[in-house]
Length: 238
Image (cartoon, rainbow, N blue to C red; front, side, top):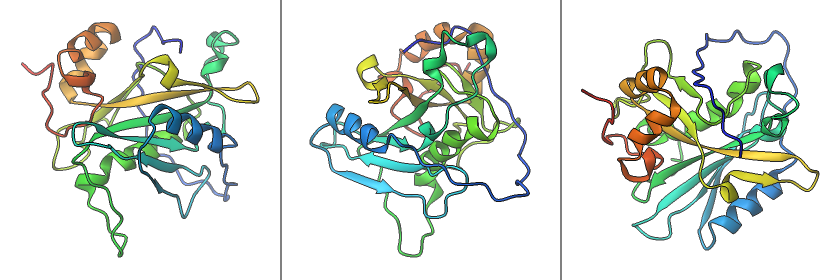
């Protein structure tokens, strides 16, 4: 996967609801995505959290459960790749293979996700899932794109994702290429970006120092922060 060399940080305002109901798009790559992930992470129980009331894009979350307590759950989206992202003109045609993507997120084995019968989920556990769904729609709703190294603060106020954590933004990273790139049967390339939730100080440091320098700091913690711990060390706190 080609890595973006700039230091893109995406800000946004709340979108107004569309006047007309839009058709729902589902990715034609669903089976290929599932096969890709199951091949890379074999012998894992799979669970799906499927969108019941989809709007514009059908975004489903799949979870490949950690086989042991020493490993991690692998969550991935199915649906973001239904539409191409709007890459800037100066990246075309060279970087056109980056226009379709899906998202991944890693949770520790002790993280429990289960849907209660009343449908009321505990945000302390579900904020990573909600973040994945939101970001999967983000580039299509805002007519932009997401790629390696991009950061998206949680509002201009850097609001924490939940009361249980001070994490308040996210950066897109990537695992090794055999995981992060899928070449589909029709020739399209689907890029899998791993979400790395960040603290405010880390977002500011990345903005000031650049992505590569910030990644060096992240390398001091287990898994570059890709395994989501709500209280993980802040690598930029004074």
